[in-house]
Image (cartoon, one colour):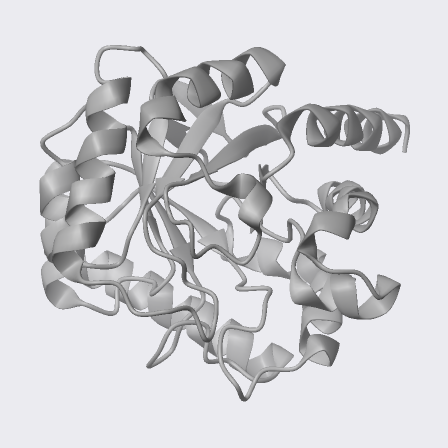
Length: 270
């Protein structure tokens, strides 16, 4: 298993499962409880770290299907406000954007990683990541964000992500199988299949990210909106850690930290 290092912290290859806490600077987010105004970003980040987060993932644009449009200038402004408040804090920060201009702005700040749900589809973006030397979280995408419709296509997408990373010179990265309704062609049945087959993604010999927090396929099962999906999210996070997840991305750090500890203990005893 290949190990990735984020801000001096090793991920994968037998290290403890790492916890990524979400800070959404986008009031348009599908889960309103995750929205953090810019004036509260620093205190929120400090709180998440105290609760157990190893890294904070900062995003300024909702990527949920049907989210209202946002101008590039507004995404830049939101990211600048958030990152400037975290500058010098020593907190590991990843930036969740797939726009090269936004990323270029973010690189002026002290960040530890890049989270690209498009899986380096944009060559300009890929070049920026390579030149920065930062590790990346790369989601399974073939020709558009999260466009795989089957398990086989998900494997194709991950292979394509690896090819793009190699071609652009991005050597340290974590793979994300893209669980979620990213495109209209996607189904909840596929999300369940990706979770059941999660361990199979270890074939790529890269650390794996489990990003399932409060997502629609969980809501479809329990019949609850995002605000009511905590228990389902914790159950799935636990299962995915047992299936090989090396990092869990969550809106609920304290609760997920406990779930990870339980899953790791069971995995050790197994």
